[in-house]
Image (cartoon, rainbow, N blue to C red; front, side, top):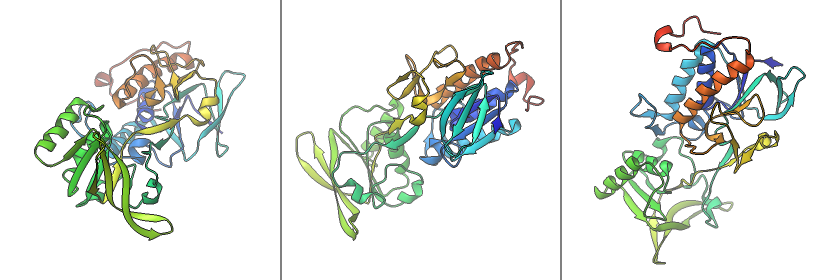
Length: 342
């Protein structure tokens, strides 16, 4: 049995930063995550993807951001239970929560911070009839190592940040990059859209809009599997063209699922947990939700927003854990973190 001040469900960037903010208040944290390592999506899905909107970092790889967060929380010695899922929650007589994991680990804490990102997630796949035949043989939904595409001919589909950012990044890695999007407009950051259009004007990216990939062609590998050789592009006019491709990467986002947390009596809205923006508390006293897993009017799913949410949540958690203690806010630029370690 593990006892702690704050049980953090989710060891992604927001969960890790929560440890730091809680540590400044001398609160102990334990992190629980279904993945076998910390870092959440940044580690599991795109460790080599550059991130551009972290303050103080013009550009930082996702994996490096996780390493820096882990180093930042070292002084506070958090506990980790990885490769296990939060299954059952009970409220004890003293008001604390008892969470039992999928491997029967028991964790007790007066405060729970759900920082599970998108929860249990899987990539959204395009409706191409035989796409499963090409998976791991030219079709990938997640880019883990850009070097895998060195010198290759790749086609990316999508109109969001991931599709734009990877198109920009892989220009200097792949032999040829084509970006296909079914609309003229994009959902991603305006700066990224401008970069893609500039690269297209320079002839470094083939930008194909008002079109979508509707078919895949390849050569048989046996056992129903095929190696990708080309994709079929259907244009708004109805015309179809064939395009050579070593890799097809549809980046249409992730389909979130809350898993057992959905049965905890929390207010759920479209697979996200509703919170009060005063302190990101849920409708269940003592349970908070921060990062991509929560929802509220004006919500933006950005890592830096999750950091802000974690900071305010920890202030509220302190008052709940120590109702008789006075909370004195201090700037780390003045005090540092020496002497604050748990």
